[in-house]
Image (cartoon, one colour):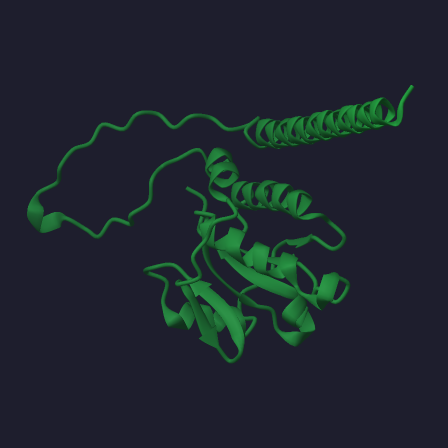
Length: 212
């Protein structure tokens, strides 16, 4: 076998090996995506297990002089709304800078309510610790926790996300993600960084709307 033929065969073998590696990588990524979809489906199924659809309401227009302010809130299934609303895309335009901490309040929530939340005047009725979780695990746990808290009638809860000291470049990635997700969750009225004794920069105190 001459050198030209040997070189051709070697090139052909390299191409076959590269093709095999690409196919294995594609199959691996497809398996990972399928497993992620299965996890999300299980979380959604668990969260909506006890949900009962709201009955249709017969709307009657009251006399104009008796019209009272009505909050702009859609009656939606709580678990489905949470699971589908917490995406990776979020604008931080609604965050307000207060004493070097990032707080959030929806339209209609008074500044005094946020101040009371920041001062610890709301009783913390529940807590979720996200230490050591991956981004996807934290998102799933947050969805389930908020749904359970709302169902139980809890108004004020604490989310412990950590300070990110163990993250790459010591950047608090999970901290930012949690705040983004909370802004997207319809039951969340406001949140603020916890006081020092409640976790400081490693936690956030969340105010939920009253259960319907």
